[in-house]
Length: 145
Picture: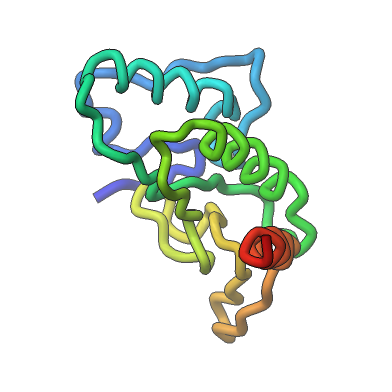
């Protein structure tokens, strides 16, 4: 099992036949991962070129860790930008946010918070973050169109 390093690297990743490369020109998540939603479009194009019979695509873990705050504007910006790219591609049939709740992350334990809802790990109290309210409002406005 991983050591819980908050830099996005675990023991398992240390043994992988590749490595994570820094991209200093991009903003980063709390995990240190680059934020580059335009590359989601590049990946989708590359998949379509490589697999001409590509079935509909569903993004199943769209999200990022950020600081432990209820006003998580950075998460809202991250999701908005990625959802816009996904929605512009007719091959994408869905975008699922990772994650509803802050939880245990295999590579970093409880040090990274990915959730739309903050979990107090001592009391287990759950408090919706700004991103939760933003996503709920965005989905409500889409369903009424």
